[in-house]
Each structure stands twice: as C-alpha cells, then as structure tokens.
Length: 408
Image 1 (cartoon, one colour):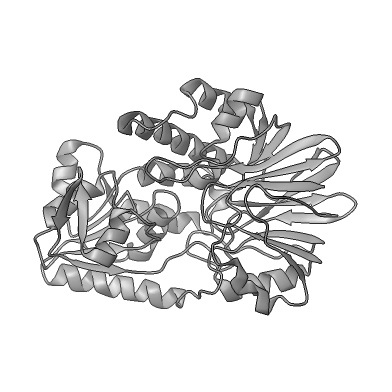
Image 2 (cartoon, helix red, strand yellow):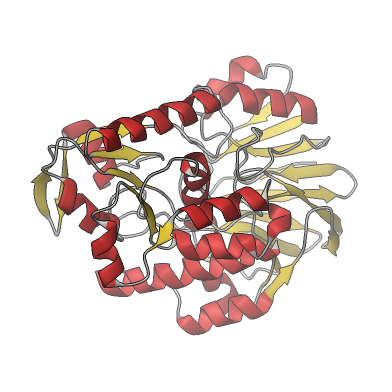
C-alpha cells in the first residue's frame, strides 16, 4: 500500500494521511490548524472512504471539504461525530467573522453529517481489502485508533494518550506489523499527573483565599471537563463558560466513552453554567471561572481577562499547550496579550500547568515496544528524530509532508 501525508507528518499541524490500496483512496483525518489565517493540508484527490480519529480541529477541520467535493463516507465514534459538528460549525463562523477564506459551506457540513458512519470501539468494517477495527486512543472521549487487517496488520493511532486521566481510560497497545503513531512530545516528559492536579488545586485555593479570582482558560474538548473534575470538590463560587458546556452535555449523552460518568455529572452540578450576558456579569464576580478559549485568542476568556488584568490578587492559570503567535504564548514569554490588535499589560499572576492529553516520549516508546511492529512511522511531530536512539531495533520512517512511501 502507498501512503502520503497531505499534512501533519513533520509538524503538529493540520493532519491528513492518504492511503492507496487495491485501487481505492482512503483518508485518515483531514484537519485545519487554528492559525491566522487557518492552515489546511494539501488538496486531497477523490476519496472513497475516510476515517476520523477524533474531533479536534487539526484532525476534523477539513472533513466537510472532503465530503462536499467527493461525497466521501466517514467512520467515527458517535461522540466524535456529535462534537465534530460543533467544531466544524464554529470554525465556519470564525472564518466569516475574521474574513478568512471559506474552505467549505454549511451545506458541506450537512453533507458530512449525513455521510458519517457511527461505530463503537471493538466494531469492524470491511473497506478496500481491509478489516478495519476501532480501538480507544485515550486522548479525549471517543478518540480512536484504527487497526487495518489485510495480508499484514497496520495500526493508525491518531492522537494518543496511555495514561488513565479522570476523563478517559488510557489506550492499550495493539500488536501489528506497521505502526503509524503520533510523536507530539518526542524528547519531552510530562510531570506526574497527580502532582499537577494537586498543584492546580492548591494554587486555586491560594488565589481565592487572598481575595482574587482564579481564571482557568481551557480547551472546550476534553480539557474543560477534566479541569472541572479536578476542581469539583472545592467549596467556592465556581462557573463554567464557553463551548465546553455543550461538549460536556454531549459527553454525558455518550457515557460509554467516559471513565466515570457519575464524577463528570457531579462536576457539572458543582459549576454554574453561564447562559446569558447577565449571568456572565455574575460569573465575573465569582471565585473560580473555567472558560474557553484555551489559548486566550477568543471566546469568553477575553472579557474575563479584561476584568482581572489589573488585579494582582487574581490569576490566569493556563492548562494547555500555547501555540506560537497566540495570546497564551505571548503572555507566557512576553508578559502581555493583544486585544483587537492593541497590546494589553496584565498585573495579575500567570501560571502554566501540564495537563496534556498526549503521551510523552517514554510512554510512546513503551507503547511502540508493546505493539512490536516491524515498521514504525512517526507523524504529528516536530521532534521525531528524538525517538531514533530508543527505537534502534525497528525500521523507523520519518516521511515528510507530500512524500509518497510504501508499507508492505
């Protein structure tokens, strides 16, 4: 079979992997990077079938382009389908507001929703000479690895996490001949997860007890829900705002993809949901606020930051990756943000915590060894070479975006 990454091979960017087998074109993910303007993969050829691992924008953001042009059917889990619809509609809305190129229309999104084939973990489908089976990738609820059984077995991981978080169970290795695996954190290790949770809890307590507001910007998908679960036992006036509220409801409608539905329900009850402008005014007086966007570039977080920016008792507690040219990265490295193009200094405290939903270097190496493949293709990484010393017994391939290669 021939493969080519249309995006995301040698960067943490818009994913898209084309697999050609027995005259069929299969696409694994087709995303969009939330840059200014958004970055998209190379144009895909007519595509017979697609597989979507999960609903983050860099993996699902261009699926409507694919479906709108080629009427491609797409396999994904039910919760991925539900949340992807939110993400795709939001992406289109932002593009219109910001004047970015429109890569697809609302009609294309409607086509995509009709073309989704809903499948659960452990289920299989025959496509292009493969028996394709879905396995949990542990990244966010519903995130999927795809196992392709033919003459040989190939596994495509998508984004992967092997640690059991509060929200989802970690991924299990799948024995295979070819392993196509993400390498986002090549050469990097995560701190102990339980310590990160404890340090966040203690910092929130410290901020509230000194009379400040703890503002916790979070990604809507996965991170909002996990941080709600981490903080749910604190006895404070706590609020949640942004798209994460809708994602939480969708997760609770698909409990089989959660580690513990009861604990997420308890967290939802603990946090007051902002549903109107007047409630947002109330929330601004709250003690703890979880809100989108996680990189401080848009969403309700802007108005909350404006309220606390001159209050040294308050704090912005970042919980996720901050990409280049985002307010989050700007704040960490240069101490200011930009609002409507104008620089804004902040006097409140700023801290960052590691709650990554990706496996780190050592976890990925252990996962690869447990899968025991002959060939390892590392993708979705800017530090792929860091894996080479630990994988000398394997045939490791580091294809570039646009480079065709073969796996047998």
